[in-house]
Picture 1: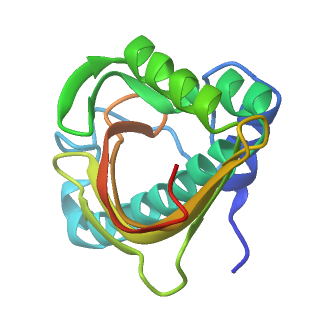
Picture 2: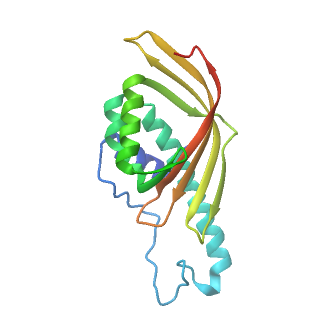
Picture 3: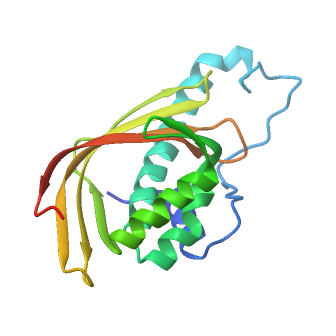
Length: 188
């Protein structure tokens, strides 16, 4: 499945450790005098809400793929730009933490498992968006493998993956990340 322009922009920002500002060329200015509270023209609210929900869904999907692609990169690349994808405060596997704590957790994991590959299992992704709340919930099954060549250890398996993508600011950001491992083999 071809990824959209946002995916390419997010991944480029991660790989280049670019600024967190990820302007999207598809966005249009909103005139506050002719729009409702969530940026919708009241005369066209139903159509705009459907279009907005579809666009939010596409962006959330792109962000979910970009996150796993970045995390599957080498440590230098993965850790450089990953924090730019997270909101200032994040519900991270059941704990409310700041972006820096997410970064610390990711660094610890990356040190233990420097070679990683995470992929969304085809056909398992479901995305629900709430236009008024400005959030999308992404759920999928992921297949993963991790290795530490220095320790000669490997682990692989599957997990339920959950991501909350907030559209409350200038760019979509991860507001929560969670899930649970459902299968492990050759574990350390």
